[in-house]
Image 1: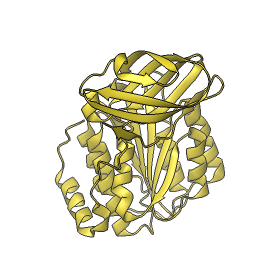
Image 2: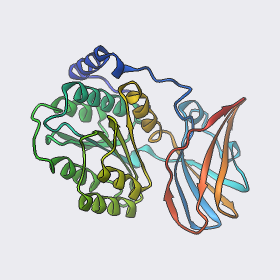
Image 3: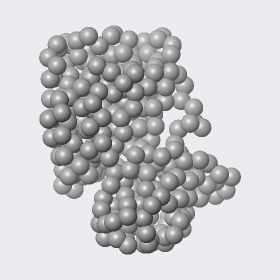
Image 4: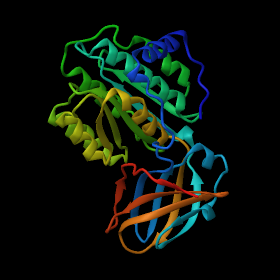
Length: 303
């Protein structure tokens, strides 16, 4: 994980977040997925490639192919993906009308996400108000841009969609992997046309969108964007907000690519064993040659 020196503004943001109380719910390690399936590439079926995000304790052991088992298949290779070739795009809605408490929670969650990225990962950030930073592997510099969140809120209902398009255009360029994270409210939305346009572009570049709404509902445009990219869109209450963003961060770190050969589609059990600990996750294998982005499926830990 990256070691990020917090700015005074960042520390103040976290202090304010903690003061809110329910917004600073501690992350329960037992509820955070240990292994997450990021994507499955079956274009060369029966040769299949699976990208997974491992917990830090597993990745630190540098597991080889022998540590992985997939039901009905043979794992031939396991390679850690270079974090320097990953760009994480972050979009935050700080439009006029977003409560200060919500903007504070978004800022704190964004800071925690950037702090949790692997060293060398690039990040780019933009808010509806026009605040932006990156792309850069200097995560402290990107985090410093968060001090502008909410300072000049705009009433333009299209601003959030434009910023999402701007960040999305920087992801999944040749030679680099990309991931889009959107921190929104239940008032955040995109037009159907914008969502379709961004979704098609991201899907073509194998970039999925993970959307976390602090509220009670996900607007249709954001739901369509997540669906188009094979990503996720969830609305959560304050008590689960940081925990949910932490799970998203976990899907972006310590990523490995598994190469294997198998027959047939359908869900398959993936088991990762290091020492005396094993973790399992479900891998959705497509029935025909294709590439899919896989929404994380919470695994269980086995003795």
